[in-house]
Length: 360
Ligand code: NAD
Ligand code: ZN
Image (cartoon, rainbow, N blue to C red; front, side, top):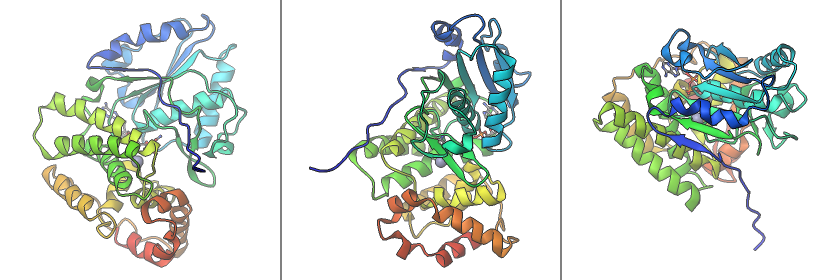
């Protein structure tokens, strides 16, 4: 048997439960190297002035930096943050804690990597380019769906591409899953980020890379998504289940891949800055030919939650922008391979892809 299997790292520690954020101080304590080596908390600025920010267990020279999630993380932004941290402190920090959605989680992973690897961050976009272990890093999601809390990547917009730093050093050393932190997520954002998880499941379960490992997580996540988005669960139960759906959805794609919606959504994001969650939804609604069952359920969920997606997004694109979008999307080979098989180039031609974009 010549099959060579990938040997993946996983998040080694996770604490789960409503209110578990309260234990963060004691979790971090053993990882503090000295009073001069601070813990850096990167926190979504939606929490500025809110109770959560006051509960961050600051000590010594620790720093809490509020960061906006209005735009997806950029390699340049990571480089600036890393330079700032290096100049603000004599010692390397003891660790990096990201508190927020996929945007803040990805930033925290990237900063932890780039504090120990010589920059710029764009040099590491790709697969297995990171040479040295990252600083200790902790992920604390405050909105559920991306799976960024378990994944082996940190997706960054770089000067030439939107691509993750995929490496064995990317996954968090510790994750805190406290469903109470997702209280107060606006309904439309809850839906978009939640659909990211749903679409991960559909793309993983319908992909050619599927195997029993991915399937077991993907099916569980899909069931949880159906409960959350199609039934009428009590709110706390819904928050708990979506948080675990996100985890399982992320685990499912660890050993497979995403597909058509993600490839196309990356193109949208690169050219128009469309955010991941809503971008996936914008694309996915038109993918009946590829995911008939998945799209049907998506429409039911959308209807139940009264979500209206914007239209005409690609109407005013120049030919050049459209070509860039098509090229960015088609550049994501593993995604197409997973979705359509080894002969995918014959199936998804540039003109077919362009026609799909024109529907959005
Ligand atoms: P996000 O982090 O961009 O946040 C979306 C919005 O929700 C923001 O306005 C944010 O301020 C707000 N928000 C978050 N928590 C809140 C709370 N508790 N209360 C009120 N508002 C809150 O959203 P996301 O969808 O979680 O993440 C998208 C990002 O994740 C993209 O950059 C995408 O590339 C990345 N991503 C990464 C992976 C991975 O494996 N690394 C996977 C999928 C997506
Ligand atoms: Zn996604």
